[in-house]
Image 1 (cartoon, rainbow, N blue to C red):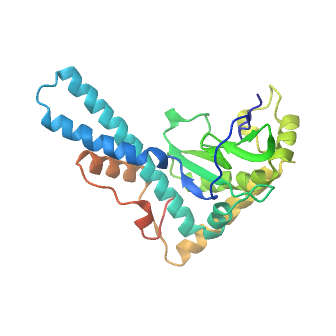
Image 2 (image 1 turned 120 degrees about the vertical axis):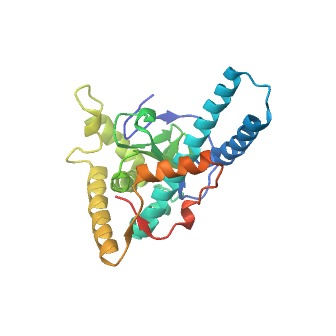
Image 3 (image 1 turned 45 degrees about the vertical axis):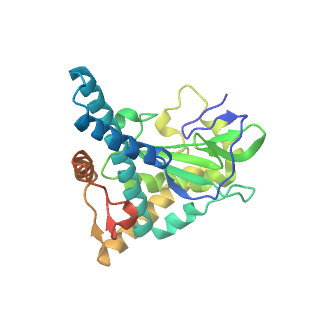
Length: 260
């Protein structure tokens, strides 16, 4: 098994092919989380026979569900902000394809630092099949890659950087794996250096996407775009609404706000 952060792993099993899009990594379990939250809140109110320990256990599960839904909303808002502030970058990644022309999904998650897979503020994860060296695979299935971003205020900037890596690697996966093996598979190479060798084309794309994003941000604000609510403030508000039993407005309904 071979791995890198950017992460590549050889897999031998298979998933179904879907149309490539930028997607929220929390989406698949969202409805289940919302349903469970409703049931547990109802149980807490109606079941008067629960012991103190049982009630504490239910409350703990409620907090875990609130946390999951909250980070779904934060991630959805970040993706929507990217679409509004830097539509060029968004559209390029939203329609990205591998070397054989197959659409590839990009799953994004904003994560708390303590839940991060690696101790980096942002990281992209790539895998490939042993039977198809051009097929990008992640924990989300075939034809997909994933990105984790810490809950920090420059998350959108970090996301643009990671999407630059993705822009190069997805259609050049087999070639990049050979480069990675040569340049990064050494004990002395720091994890933070992976992807940023002077000859690494994905690193050049990442730097280019950073510059494009910053220029888009400048233009957006110059033309009257508003800064979005700070991520921490937004998270506090979403959690408060969920604890009070109020619904959370989906990021797709947000106005053209911006977070940096």
